[in-house]
Image (cartoon, rainbow, N blue to C red; front, side, top):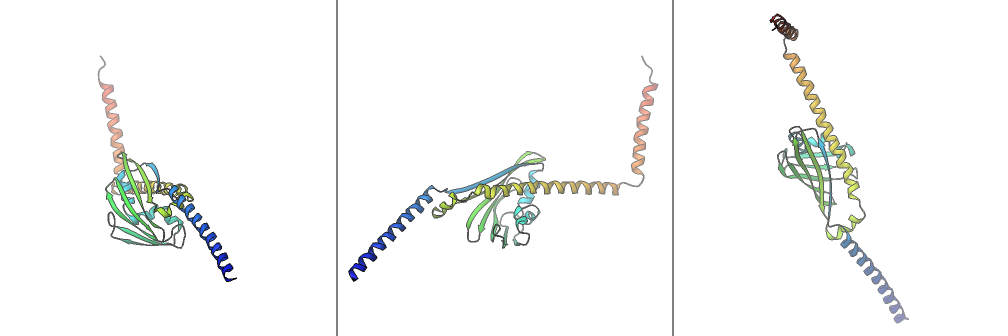
Length: 231
């Protein structure tokens, strides 16, 4: 009876090991088939200079003005370090699953051209994000916001089941639209403030005097033309 029990146990163990081996082979096959890297990007032409755009993306504190992740969880907490540009960083904590916890750092910054960011997501690994700015003319720029991540071999299987393009792409689009709208609002505010400043600087009655002077000059010119003898 003991030998019979042992033979049955060995047979069952062989079947279990066979099933495990099949599952491992399937998993390894999926890892081979999965993507070795993930790349997602969106671009937009903005009616603003590369400098204006760069000033926003080169400062994590300025991201509060337009970043879509601030919209996802207004209650998230942020800690900023080392001001702006290369070496600056921002750590965040959120109970919202789509935001989570993590840290991002600017590892390379080229004025008015590009910003490269290192991303660390707590429990999910690391990745990189970037902004590429191309000047169209002095008042217009093409802005690209991108993300890329190298997938470790045993995690490549997830790339087959997660649609990163649809997960990240729309968020980047919303962020670029937010950034464009924010800069437009700032330009409008600056114009209004400049107009108010001009009105304050102009002495009372000078605007009317200026208009009268222009009208007198035009009338005098017309009078001179009328007085000139015709040939």
